Length: 180
Image (cartoon, rainbow, N blue to C red):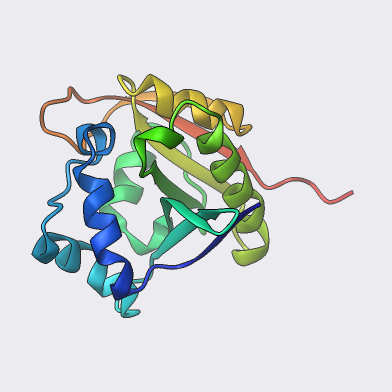
């Protein structure tokens, strides 16, 4: 069973370990030192940022991280997406990683994403859509989004998370299901 809870400061050593894993570091390009993790994740853990950092579990074992936020709360991200596709007010975005290399390539990513997408409709009752930009070079990531039910709606030039990458991105979208 996939579950989650907010990241706490006591989780920072695990996040640092995951961020240092080559398969994560390649795409996230975060400082994995204790100071870097505290700087990047501390404000959200303390409730000083409007985003959510969620530690993901599979049958009680920590396996990954999902970040979730309203795009309205991050003007630069909103503007960058709005330059290439329609971004409705209250839209949500997520980012994700699987920490342990032994957990990649076994279908866990799409399952985690799918569970979070479904929960977003309840957790963000005014969100009309979820939009996720992903590096076009990160095939595993955009394939996980497709397997989770998202649809590619745009190709865009966007600032990459890793400066080694080019600016080519795909934008994926899922609209709120119509109640019926």
